[in-house]
Length: 488
Figure (spheres, rainbow, N blue to C red):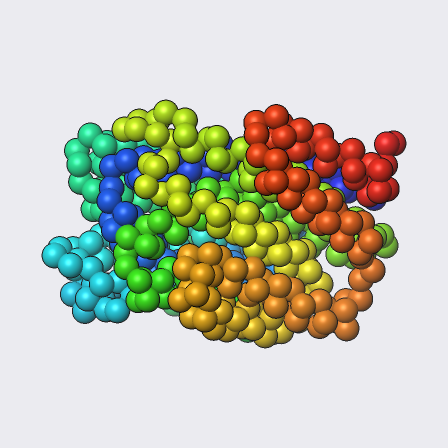
């Protein structure tokens, strides 16, 4: 068991280093935007990228998880066929929808979920190409994960982010292109990633096609297309049931932005988004964990000790989340005051929204628990039930955002997200225990949460740099004292 967990930890570390570096570079765009864009412009960018998140799910058709599930490590020819079928489906849909988006840009720009003025149609046309290029590299990135090539995966992701950040500095800071500059940087950086995959996408035909002639060549090509089409249907049967779940998941993540925009203003959305992004350390960890987690449990699903390993992973996941929560929550008030390009690390006009940071991190933790529990459904091929759990979360998020925002302002939107993720975990737990029963160490998990909350409450009651520094050591000592951690 220990060797397998070390294998997961190794992959997580590789994904983690690149993701932490990449997310940190992306995170630096937040203070950049607060000093060079207005709150309203940040709100506009936020609304646009919220829509892009939904489009990305639509383009995928659920083919990424389907490709990973049907990947055969020992059968290269079969895996290549699965790759071709999945890529074809994503590429065709992406090209068609992008064309329609460009044509309908004036209507999209003035819709209630964007409310763009002036050159809004041009902004939408630029933004339309970001999800297209994202879609064209979706399956190639999934193949790298299944080939256990985390270093290549990580390097490409990091290079893409470097290009994006560099172009943001040029377009927004130096050239003053504002919203258009942010989106152009996104298009060019996404396109640059595709360039790296072109050699692997342009492959020689199979030997059957090379040696076929005349009618035989046509028959062989028809046979290849028929095989791809048959495979695509099989992939869609697995993947399409995950699309509603993915849509619901994205709704939980970003639907609060357009709702806030409709209920308040783009400036309030900018305030919310800026502080929301300050919770990025815990989000980074959950993202890194998910990258390594899915290939890990799919590779070890048939092991005799699989369930014991998966249970242990959730306990360790909770402990690490608690540590990241404390470090972020207690030090962020000092970090935002640091000098940065154009002023402070975060412009002081946004400091009033910092109260949502610990709330957002609490939501991220439950999102991570959901990711842990979802392993059972993927292993048992019961993904058709995922939409129920995520659908409940989406409904809860929309309802409680509408209810709490008028009462609690942006804190209401943050708490709505916590309620949504807790709801999804409860539903998923109930069903997973019936199709893939697991025994988790609830005592250690709950104790960890209480210890983390107690330490944070103490720092809030006695705010100073000294109590902030002592928070993490106190957390570790209390976990040892309560038996959550063992000295060995």
